[in-house]
Length: 536
Image 1 (cartoon, one colour):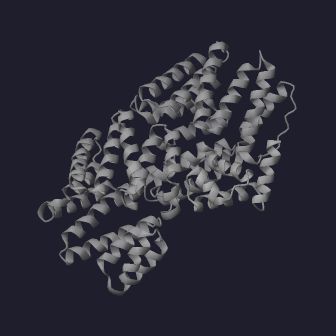
Image 2: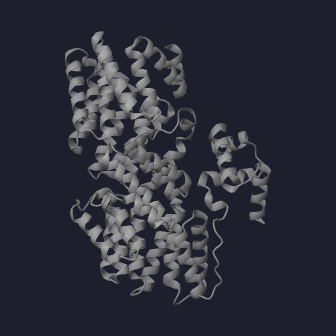
Image 3: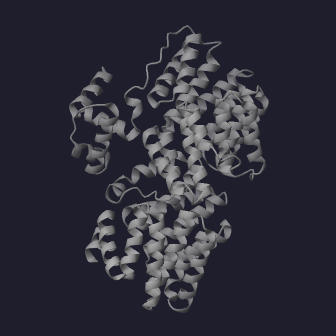
């Protein structure tokens, strides 16, 4: 089994799986079952992970090895909660672990506290438990326990509305995990929690930055966003960053992971992909994704957006209102519903109500220190005031535009430019045309067909020729791929690019391959030529 553990340490999950499987099938050794469970976890086999971890637990108990048995039981707490949303099974395994630890291995009390915090739904109680685990981890020099407990405390603080304090702890835990203080599983768990918390707080910019920071880890071990929920949030980050091709891939995987086993994450993943399809102008594809999810809270915003795309603002408003009426007013996850309700009110020519919702969204973002939420509120407010108070409306849109540009979110930037162009059209046709043309170019680059059509229609109404040309080259690239392409244009080699961007050579090779594929180029020379042409 030594070779299998070495393969696991190197991130060779397939090699580790094959090695552990051979030993497990030959002699059903619990260590092999436990190692196999972990490798299958990284390979996305939820059923195999749990089956082998349970068999490992039984084997360790039969051999009277309480520490290993408790470790297997604690692992199953997380697997059942995150893979299947099965809190009953998770708490059952927690009780098993607690009995063993209290009677036979009290030195694992910190791990027990951490697992208990993980399944405790009250964020105040969860924080208290996680802080006790954190103290034990620090006192005993247990880096994995310390980092995971720090992550749990951060998550509990965010759930309590203490956003800045909680995010600071998540950032600290992530730094330690990525630097190598914890093992790969700790990195995966911390990364997944951070992605979920960032997504729930509308903090896409922070999530995107952590994705970039994880590049070296991903090179070695693979994507750490292994559960359906965090994979969905990762897909949302890719969507916002403009890498729609990769976003579709990850969201499709999240849907497959959760289908039939975990209804809430499945609905969430389907709804997120449906929003992306709506951005692409593919309403029927979005409707198919949402089929059967009527009434689910996770899909309410997507259903409202679908009704808006179909020209049914009253239905859109009704769906959003029904969900908002059942939600806690200060919860961050109502932000998207507030915005889509505001858009429906604008379509219904209820400008005052839309403006009220815009101010509500700005206030929610301000209280929770979420700049992008504020930006969405500013944009909604600007759109609501566009007709009645165009000067104020323009100011709000400009504020939103600056925030989206700063965050590097191309689709939100283009949407805001188009809203600004519509506001300016009656009074400043030249500036309106310039904003609409920039917006149309970005929409075409991203593949946002419906929005590109809207921008083109506005340009034609302004007397500007605006034939659609289809996706441009550079808009298909992510921000990091664009950076790599620019350095290719300077004639830098892969090692030189890696040094310039502080990433591994393998990461650069991956980016170069994706750039050539996306742009339909045959090699580095053609890529450099494309850069030169676009700079001339």
